[in-house]
Image: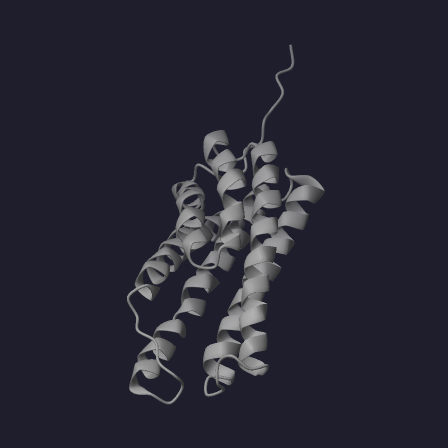
Length: 195
């Protein structure tokens, strides 16, 4: 698979992942809750186990955006890219820890479940910082449309809010993914005219 093909497919992953994350966020408001071991908790647990499936394509989308811009956005972009990936990784690890590893532990006490929740929240903070840095570098790289890159730089910070933030984050990230998928975010070599 060539770089251009990977960038396009990563754009599709960005769109799918950010939309799934936003839909998961909306759906989480309608899922009931119960204490571990109850039938209500089993539904709650199952629903929350779906979150990593939405976040992993978002990670692939960041990889594609990085591949499209890596030679143009310098240290700030690389720092934002790595920070955003670490944030997403922490959010996935926290979610997996809470709903796969420590799922039968009670809430409200210091245990693995509580530590996983803290890691999940930390992931959102790190993702928000990385998204803002990455967004600023994306504006400066001039690979994708300036308005979309500016929107991501401004709205990426809302990822700090674990539930509501995903809805806002999805708007510019889906659009950036579309630009990669459609080929509008391909690196462009500018040739100088010699007179």
